[in-house]
Length: 164
Length: 429
Image: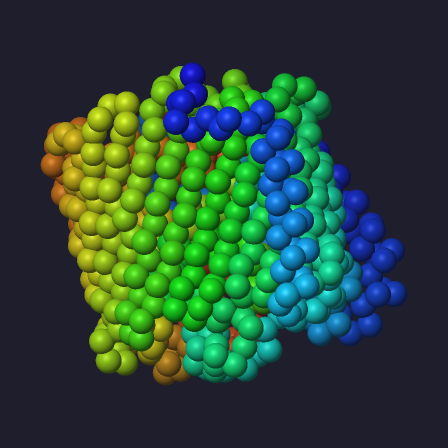
């Protein structure tokens, strides 16, 4: 049973139609009023600069239509990069080969990322150390976080030996 | 059959991609670069297996990447990445797991500053509501300056474990309207069918916005078309004032709609789909730079359950010195405070990463990590877990061969004095 608080007054596919119509209207309206558009990007970032993780070391956001601040890798960037990658994956791809993402997001990475990159202690990686014990608690408190990566049949094989 | 078919699918994809690549690439890539990266990892550890206690396990992993592309002009490119494993001690520790996986393998067409891109093969699609690995085709096209439309279709690679890939398919798309840095709003659709049975049908909206250099917003709402209710809402902001950054966030999940991905999908979570629970997370993180070397950080999350009327709270503080400099070290302390002793722990971590330079190896480094966890309630008679890592490495042959080694020691409720090591050999051409 679904919770009533999440239900909409519209038939399911009407939601899609309504959104499409609104987006088209907004897009058409703004196109006439404001100069803009998607970010035009090179395939790879030029190999310049001392530290490509800190965009603002070289780029001045005030003189650009690109949100450099969003992509500067601060202390906790690894834990909040998803929101940026969801809408701007092409920006990530300018510096990162896809294998970098696959360490965590791959269909079945083989080794957990903190083990594969054991010596890189600077990176805040999920499941570092004794996560086998800690996942009992984290999983009870927020099972949605487990499901996001281990919900499909292939990825759930990792859980199967204990959770049959 | 379930074990064999995914391998066949992968093999077909690789062979097809390579054949197409050999046909297409020579004419389209005049200044192409071939990049080959091999990472070989050897682990040594002891585990209890069905053959007995303290069995020696010696797996060797090979992660191989091939990228063939023209970085300046773009065009057609080839990208492959996968791994394989062999237990040199011939134990049965990995008997229930596969011995390899193609993580991705696709042909791509893309031009710098171009408005059209296409990928054919195994690929991970992460855009809007979609976060899936697909064996198929994905295309994206900028319709003028303000719209981007994309679509994909093929086999859902993560569902081939269930009776092979017969009857499986996945398709979907996204329409995004954007206005430079000001905002991007997308609307997406995705349907997954496993063995001719619907797994999920989802639509939803996503947004990223940077209305000023001080504010960034990101979020997604996904709607389950099968249950006709919202699966989840996840929104976060990023607020910046000089050296201070604050990132509030709000997530909400309806279990009946979030965990309802078909009868076979993730059976581990199936019972949660029968719950009428709603979980709401709110909190965020913050960091402040004090001078040029010191960064302080904090994380807090409040968990609220509607149905159970329970709360949990996680808070952590971090301190880092010399972030991404030649000598970086940091400490972290966190506490999970659940509704009962079973759901409470305190975590302490310290690490360092020291780039010692080229005295012995080029770009040589020494790294260390220590983690201590106190569990409020005993687990298997233990109330504490410890984990220590010592790592070192560097380039044996500059820009060609890198060697890394890590020694681990763990003592926790599952393992008593667990000593292991991992050796990593990276070759880049």
